Amino acid sequence: MFNKQNQFRKSVLFFALFATGLSYAQAQQDQVKGATQDENGKFLSGVSVKA
Image (cartoon, rainbow, N blue to C red; front, side, top):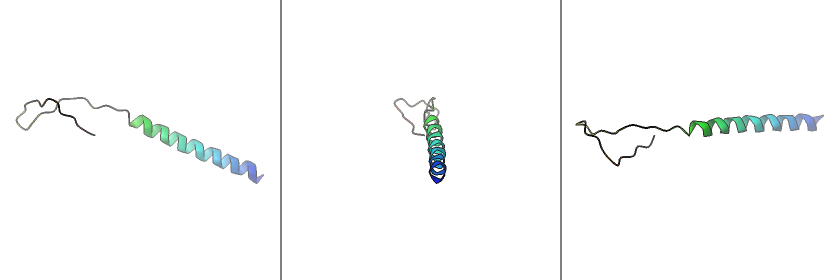
C-alpha cells in the first residue's frame, strides 16, 4: 500500500516539476524587436539590448 502511494506522490511531483519547467522554458523564447534612439531622437546602429 505504501509503495503505490509513494510512487503516486513521486509521479505527481515529477509532473508538477516538469510542467513548471516547460512553462518557464516557453516564457524564455519571447523576442523584443524595435529601434534604439539616443536622447536627441537619432537612431543608434549596432546596439543590442538585453531584457
